[in-house]
Image 1 (cartoon, helix red, strand yellow):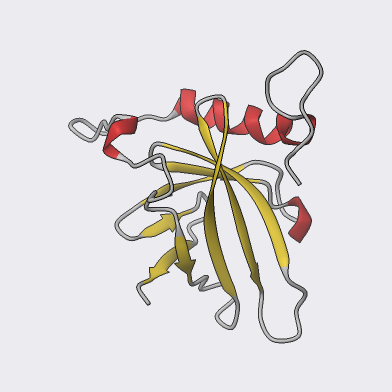
Image 2 (spheres, one colour):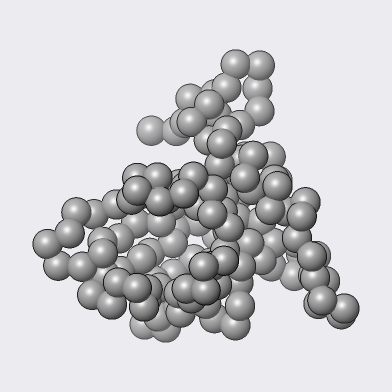
Length: 138
């Protein structure tokens, strides 16, 4: 079901912490000289480079699938990350917000942080802890 709207408009109540983390990441993003991209350089629609299946070196038997949703929260495109950490592990679904070359994810359903932002880096999502999820091309 779609998220319930927040009183007075804005981000749905259950996405407010994720939205705040994504806004902070977007506003504090620093680029190297010549690296600056505009949102138009990254497809913010259903063909976003974040859409696809990814490997996670920290969970080699697991899977991660990023699905871009046809919904927006402010300037962010909603997304969902589903998967497992390996055989016998329970499946998870994590809400996420995508903007430009960043994805901010609520990892609390897996026991992780509320708003962790990763960045697109040459066919992979690079996370601040040094982990890198390479996209699986088939």
